[in-house]
Image (cartoon, rainbow, N blue to C red; front, side, top):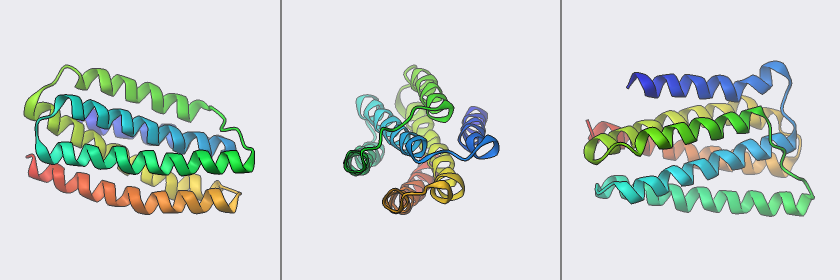
Length: 171
C-alpha cells in the first residue's frame, strides 16, 4: 500500500512539474493526455491477462474501451488541427513509472494482483484527474482540445469512483 501512495505522489509531482516551471503547451498537453490513456490501456491488458476476478476483468475491459475511444478522438483532433503531440518530461516520466508498475505487477497473481492493479488504478486516476483539472485544462489554449480534456475528466472521474468502489470490495 505504501508503494501505491509513493507512486501516486511521484506521478502528481511529475504531472504538476510543467505547471511549476512553465505552463505546458497544447502539443505537450495532448501528448500527456494521450500517453496517460495509452498507459491505462496497457495496464488493463495486463489485468486481462492475469486476473480471473470477473469484477476486475470487467473494470479492465471498461478501461480499454473508454480510453481507446478517447484516444481515438484525440488523434482525430490533432490530425484535424495539424498539431504534432510533443513528448515532454511529464509524458516520459509517466511512461517510465507505468513500465515500473507493470513489471512489479507482473510478479503477482490472484487476489494480490487484483488488489495491486485496482489500487494502482485508483492512484493513477486520482493523479491524472487532478492534473487534468488543475494543470492541463486550465493551460489548454485550443477550445477543441480543452473540450476533449473536459469530457475526458468527466469520464475518468467516473473511472476513479468505480476503481475506489472496486478497491473497497477487494479488501
